[in-house]
Each structure stands twice: as structure tokens, then as C-alpha cells.
Amino acid sequence: MKKAILAAFIVGSLLAAVCPTDARDTKYLLPIETALAVKDAQDKLDGSVKFFFGNQPTPPILTKLGTDVSNRKTNAFGKSDEKACNWAFLSAMVALEKRAQQLGANAVVNIVSYYKKDVMTSATEFECHAGAVIAGVALKGDFVKIADK
Picture 1: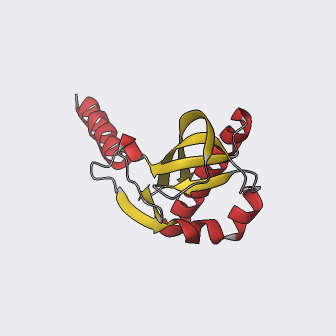
Picture 2: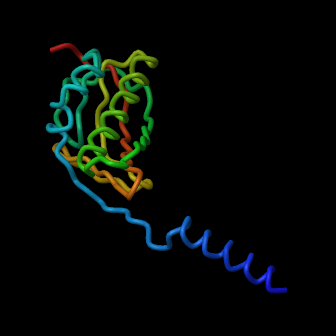
């Protein structure tokens, strides 16, 4: 009987340590311009697709090819929240660029933050949520062909 109680105590203690009841989920609104200015962004985005956030004006839209969501997470362990968020944002942007290329689009317009399906529209900021070990960004946009200027 004592062994069963001890075993239950040990298992309960381990579960309590592994499953924190108050996990951190800090919301950030960070500048798009800063995230796109880092060298990694310049190396990973090839420039063949133009991006328009929120209600930014666009050249005339010739064809709408679809709408999609890019939901990306990154390991935030040992990184500042801002660095982890910028990395998750870049990952989401790369996914939008690849999807646009697959569809034959040359632009993604009406890009909004879409974390847990909550829309946050901004031409200058994106939403990121950071925890102790994971940071995440979700973006939603319309894939289109725009007229060349």
C-alpha cells in the first residue's frame, strides 16, 4: 500500500512539473518594417511576390487566385521574444511567398494577423504570441495577380 501511495505521489509530482497550469502567452504587436529589414528576410524572400498589409493601397488587381493562412511557430528557447517573433513572422512570409508562386500570383494583398482566427489588421504591425519555449505568428492573405506599374 505504501508503495502504491509513493508511486502515485511521484507520478503526480512529475505531471505537475511537466504540465504547468499557468503557461506564458505574451501578445506582441511588432513592426513589420523591422522584421523585413533583417538580413535573413532579404536572403529568404526572393522579391518575386509583392506584399501588401492591411488596407495598404495596391496596384489594380487583375485576378484573385485564392486566400490562405500561414501559421508558423518557432523555438523561442534562449531567444528574446522579439527575435523569436521576427523569425516566426519571416517563416510565415516565406510560406505566403511559396504559396503565391504555386498559384501563379505576383502579390499577396489584405495580409492580416490571424492568431487563433482573431483578425488584427495593420499596415505597419504584426501580432505574435510568445511563451517560454514557443513563439507563433499567423498571417492570412489573398493571392492575386496585380498590374505592373
